Length: 626
Image (cartoon, rainbow, N blue to C red; front, side, top):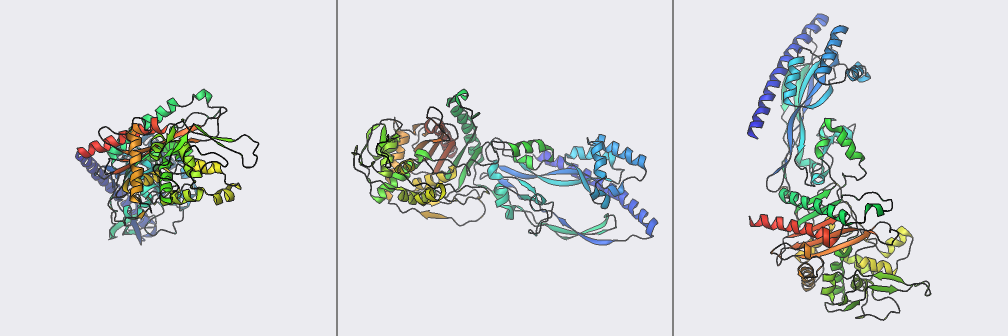
C-alpha cells in the first residue's frame, strides 16, 4: 500500500514537472503572439473554484469501503492548434494513434459549434487514464500547445461480492441532474455529487467546502499567475455501522441458498411461460439495543465503480437496462407478504386485547370451510392449513406455524360453524392494523438510505377506496397469516423482530456510526409477560425437534425464530403458486444482541432462508468470541 502510494506521488511529481514545462512553452507562445498583434498582453482577473477532497467511507472496524484515487484526463484546446493544415493533420493523426482515439471522431469534434464559438474552452477527449499512460502521452505530445493533461480525482469502491452497493450508493456529475445548478452554492456544474445510498444522504459531511484561486488570464484563457485566495476544506470521513466481514460471509450464504431455492422450485418447463427464476434476495442484521445495522445485503446488485469510470459505459448501460433492476435494493424496497413471520404479532395482539390466552386451544384438521355469505347454496370457500396439526395451544401453534389457528385468532370461527376447539372471538382487521403499525409496518423506518418503501397495511377503508371492493372474512384470515394485501420490506421485518427481541422498543435503524444522532425509539404498549411468552414460543420454534425454524439455530446457542413461506403472483393451472421464503430471528438467548431477517425470492422459509440465518449467527458469534 505504501509502495503504491510512493509510486503515485512520484508519478504526480513527474507529470506536474512535465505540465509546468508545457505551461512555459504555452506562456511564451501566447505572450509573443499577443505582443506581435497588440504590442501588449491584455490580462483580466479570474476566480477559479478548487474542488474539495471528499471524505472516505469505512466499516465499523476501519475497513476502507470508498476512497478517492488520482487519475488523469486528456484535454484539447482547439485555439492552440497549428494553423498550417498539414501540421494540424499530422498532430491529429499522432494524437489518435498515440491515445487510441478515432481520427474521424476527433475531426468531427473540432467542427462542433461549441468549439468553433469558444476555441479556448478545453475539451476533455479521454478520461481516467493512469499515471503511466499520462507520462507516456505527455512525452510524445507535450510539444503541441493544443494538448494538455489534467489531474483529476475519482471515487473507488471496495464492495464487490458483498451485496453492499445499495448502502454505499454512487456519484454523478451535478449537471446530469441539475444542468443549470441554480440550487447548490458549494458546487460547480461539473462537480461530483452523491446520487444514491449514503453517498447521497451524507453528502453534507462527505463533500467538504470548495476553495478559490485567483489568476491573471489573457484573452485565450491562458493563466500567467495564480494565487490562492481560499483553501478548500476536505470532507468528513464516514464510519458505517456495517461489519463488512459479517456482510461478506452472509452474502456468500445468501447466494448459495438462493440457488438452492431455485433448484428445488418448479421445473422451468412447467413455469407456464413465466420465464427463468430471478436470482433475488436480501438479509438484514440489526443490533436490537441500538438499531445499528451490522449488515444490509441485496442481490442482484451492481458495481458502483461503473458510475465513476468513463471507460465502463457498456457495463453501466447494461445495469440501467437490466430487467431484473439491480439498482433496486431488495432489503429496503422489495415489498412482499411477510407470511407466517407475522403470526407472533397476531398472537401478541390477541393476548393484549384478551381475545385469546396462551392456553387457547384450536383444532386444525387441515382445512377450514367458510360458507358463501352472499349465496348459501354455493360451495364454501376452503382455507387450508399446510398440515393437519390436531389440537394446538398458542405455543404449539407458533412452533408448528398452523394457519388455521391464526385464521381463527384473526377472524374467529366462520358463521354457523361449530368451533373445533375454544370459541374464539376474532381480532378483526382494525385491531390487526393497529398492532401492525405499532411495530412499524406501513411506514418508513427512517434509515439513512435514499430508497425505502413504506409497505402496506390493508384495512376495510383501504380496500373499499382502492379496489372498490368490500372486506370479507377471507381477507381477515389472510391478514392473520401475513398474506393477502399486507406488504413489508426485509428492513421493516428487522425492526419488528428487534422489538420482539428487546421487549417492545421499536428502534429507528441506522447505518451511520460516527455522526451524532438522537436515538429514536418508540415503546410498544404491551405487557412484559406477553413479550416474554412470544419470545419463548419463538425459541421453541427454533429449538424443538419439529419447530419450523430449527434450521436457523446456530451450533451451541439458542435463538428465537419464525419462518414464513408466502405465495405470490398468479396461480398456476394446478392451483399452486410461486413462493418466497422468509425467516425472522433474534439471539443469542437469553439476552438477544442481534435480529436477523433473510428473504429469498424463490424458496422456502424453513429450508432456504433459515440456513442463511444460521450461517449469519455463527459468523457473528464466532467473531464475538475471537
